[in-house]
Image (tube, rainbow, N blue to C red):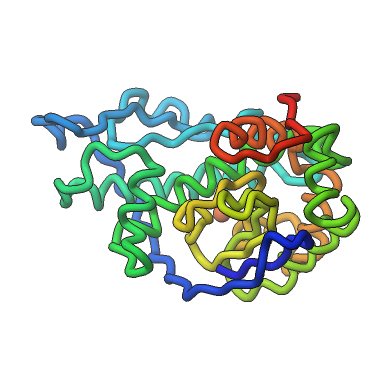
Length: 276
Ligand SMILES: [Fe+2]
């Protein structure tokens, strides 16, 4: 992870070694495979995407595929329905199914929340085989909720004030976020996070499946930089994709709600971040 910026005096530059992502498989387990679900095991219904309706309605697995909080065509024309069908309906689904397949073989990991599973399998920088799929499931859930129809523009009130406090201005934040996305090599993510100890916002970029939970940061927004996120709509033009996300897709409403919750754990003093 590279901590890129927080212009306040609280934050400093740091770096960490990345882990690599594993290729997901696509086998979905049915309830008949888990006849003895016992103490601590998670048994969740998979939410099948609309594109596959009619195939199966009651598949049971350890973790389910959560739907984006909007219809698959709701982000048009900035992110196409086709991209959502492939990115969410295939890639995200594959991470869920691959994770469930791995968990079938590892009793010690039963009973964790997804957050706990990510921290546990990150294993202090020596990731277990389940880490990449677990993190990618969480990353995509978070990413879908980092966007909204009619997104972009500017955050409001307390969140804007906190950004201005930590980055100097909203424009400076925006420039640094975009720069981080464009200088990130290969597949990965860029995040706006709240640093617990330093009590400030910062931009970090992570490689492959790694996310800020492993360093105990609180994610506020994220942008998926894997090519599967933008290739159908923007081909190899990552700059156009990143600028479109910032100008038309990012959900400052979701960011404000996350900041409001984060203040239960991090004392930011004033301003308080209101829920939108
Ligand atoms: Fe993705």
